[in-house]
Image (spheres, rainbow, N blue to C red):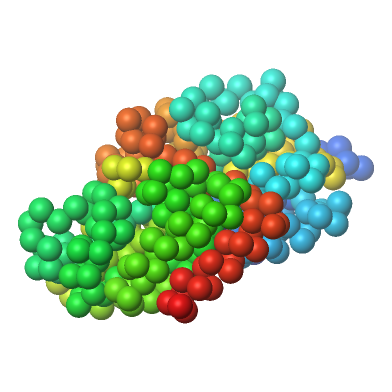
Length: 370
């Protein structure tokens, strides 16, 4: 998964948050907690209130790529008590032994998590042993309703990957512009799944089939980029994009604020789509494990996590928090999949290096169009 989604939040939490203890501490051992989270990925009041309530000295540092986090974790001594990896990186890091299991006896608020989403997340964290899921989203279709209607008519299949992968559709959309993420780890699993193949396939021949499908529609794709599509669709420069659910929500609001007359909508295709999620996990080298669990349990409180979703524009997997989230997120099936739609979602997994090389080669061929 790319990290672009994390640049969509609208305010900055800050590089470091220090709270003075609100209650008496043992002089030789004050309570502490060190957190390493994505930039712009927390409602600032949450860590501030937690520190004031508990008297824990809280250090809050930020990163902007999964690779930066992984580099710290793989040293064996990250210096942090809580970190926030994306699901495919979480998978690899669990296998590398960099995390310690959660003590769920210290997480009574675990009961608030959605069992259906937890089951999906076992693809990266078997048994939900190591990670507390935080926010999630999907990769789906964003579009300009007026321009798509002009190109394909009122019955355009905006709720289906047919809009993209059927040549008779995408060829007519070329005139108004089609863009895709520059991300083989997102786009090729979608193509595989559309063909009825495993989106996490480890068969080289499956990637050749996906390549054939993509090369057929390649002449009608304006560009591959993981950021440009957001401003372009909000400005009306393109009419269709494959991108992150939260990005379309954010830039639909940007278009409204600009008053440029552009409408941005999005749909979760009926055939299914990839689900990504970010989680809090405790490194094996953590020094303040009790405090980490205390923070996690607080985060699982529905009244705490609901405002974070409102702030970030992403749903959370807390079934008792989502009714408290604003309707523009809670009741939008393109942002918060229904229980029925969840059945069609799939979670991506890291590939063996040999297959990753195949996927990279195929992607370069697709991008070049040869």
